[in-house]
Length: 129
Length: 129
DNA sequence: CATAGTATTGAGAATGATTATCATTCTCAT
DNA sequence: ATGAGAATGATAATCATTCTCAATACTATG
Image (cartoon, rainbow over all chains, first blue to last red; front, side):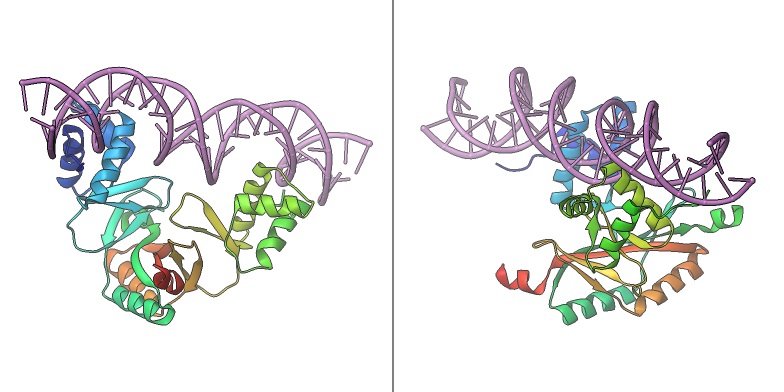
């Protein structure tokens, strides 16, 4: 049978799809509960996994233990995480493509994906310190 | 007081320092136990954290939940993980420096570190599939 | 329309990696 | 040797995530 877009999954998808935030499972459950449509935590995890597999959202793994999700369809980018305030900034650089090209040419590997997370202090936290 | 290089930590350090593997806590405990010098798992974790803080080993966070450690002093590199066989290959590319430079110039951030993990199929797993 | 068969849900238990607790032991500088 | 700060090991606790399982919800047939 096919994967279904249930009310629960639709709620998750709307939440992520209409924002530029990087959500973790807990945050989603919390916000949905506040909005009156609380759903079980297992369902949140299953929904996120299903939506990611369908390509409707994108999962990223930052440095702390939790997986975050952002809406799909944005152009490719990586993430800068401020270790002081926790803010997440997106960035991208054309040179990255060269790196992948070089890597696969050198090693013969097929590249399926990557995680590029840079961390440090953002501009405002740098000044504050 | 100062941080001490206890026999346990020395054992961990030797194990990591004399190899080019990427160890996780469990693997270290397992191998040390086999070598007849088994140490408590909490001590393994504490030892790894202490050695990393001292700069004697380097910790990296790959895609699966567990943190790996490699010996310090190698020149900078990133990691390619084959999702089929689990092998870890190191790579590096000069363009990466440009990316950091550009990022900090654009955003005003100070960069303290990064994780760049590329995953896919290595050459042999590609052929096998 | 009935209904079998698969998906999904929610609650709670279970997992796996890591961290905290705590009493005990070690080590160093006095 | 003594006292204070480190380190240890066993075990409990934590945290994110996954599994289990009984109860529902859909959906594609017959």
